[in-house]
Amino acid sequence: MPSVADLITRKAAQEATCDTELPAEPWQTAQNASYGPGASRGDTFAPLPTPQAPLPARYTQASPEELDAMIAAAKEQLGDRVKILGHFYQRDEIVKFADFIGDSFNLAQQAKAHPEAEAFVFCGVHFMAETADILSGADQAVVLPNLNAGCSMADMANLAQVEACFDQLHEALPGEAIVPVTYMNSAADIKAFCGRNDGVVCTSSNAATVLKEAFERAERVVFLPDQHLGRNTARAMGITDEQMCMWNPNEPLGGNTAQQLAQAKVILWNGFCSVHRRFTVEQIEKARAEYPGVHVVVHPECPAPVVDAADSSGSTEVIRRVVENSAPGDVIAIGTEINMVNRLAQQYPDRTIFCLDPVVCPCSTMYRIHPAYLAWTLESLLEGRVENQIAVPEATAADARVALERMLAAKPC
Image 1: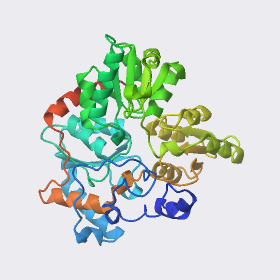
Image 2: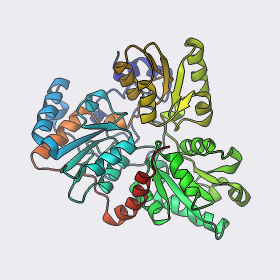
Image 3: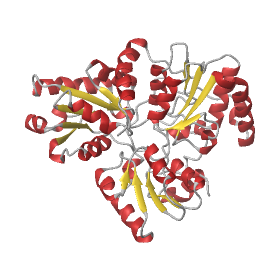
Image 4: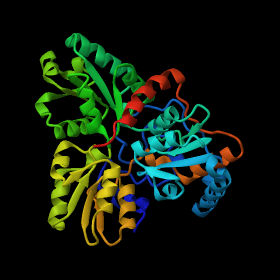
């Protein structure tokens, strides 16, 4: 099985939004005024408040074998004091050292479930580490190995825009209860806004449960920042496209008329995931033509026509279970991030498992968690230094915790 870096290098030339620089070490592209080479390259860039400091040469010049030895030795000495949380989308070189592997919902639960740990090293992106900090104890540290590991979707909604949205909605729809629901892929201050306004956080695992409960409290929901997860979840509940409208934060009333807003049960924020937006109905049709009987499963961050054309859809955990429950000889085409697809193909060699997208574009920000950064953060903890700590101010954390606790209580359907 070729590595993800090999696949990118071979196929990047086919599509302008993918770039052969992505396999390079992330410290070589860390100063780019963008999300970095790869699927998110074309997104509007929101610089992170604290850029990643340069790594010492001991780490950048180490071989893969040397980095593995550093990580293994530090992890063994730290023992149960430190837990490594690894998202499904992380590269294999990171996942093999994780104490827990899962989607954002699973990992949020792990951060809350291990009060004995002194620190969590979160191998994911910034909003995930924020969530772990909010849910973990005050005496526990959360570390993000590379501070440049942000999320383009999360940056598509900021607090000022969300507050302005609700001000305009309350003016256009006076006296109506409107509940904010934010996807996990959002900043801590937006989660806090939800906590203050009877809202809730959701993940792709429990979005349906959250949306159903939100409608018990209000006749209208603003779903942010991912329009596709919001639309797909609402449609599965029987809400029609005519009962939804899009909110563009750069236009008055989000680009809608007051009448359109009054008819809408779900107001969708104009955000998206760069990786999942790449999947198309044409890719599914090609997979079915080449592999009659193929099972197509996609992530609900994909556009609605793609979800409709697939055989099933669901969170990364759902996708993992689809593969786990398949039989030898089955063919499964997957619409999600390539690192996870490649790992599933390696775990189940008696099945044909492949990514729908012929141009391999990983989540470029997830890809920034390189073994060199993990080795550095673990050895720093071993020496008594907490580098790259993610600490959400308590005023924000208190309100965000309310919305996150509601999320944890909303079990997936």
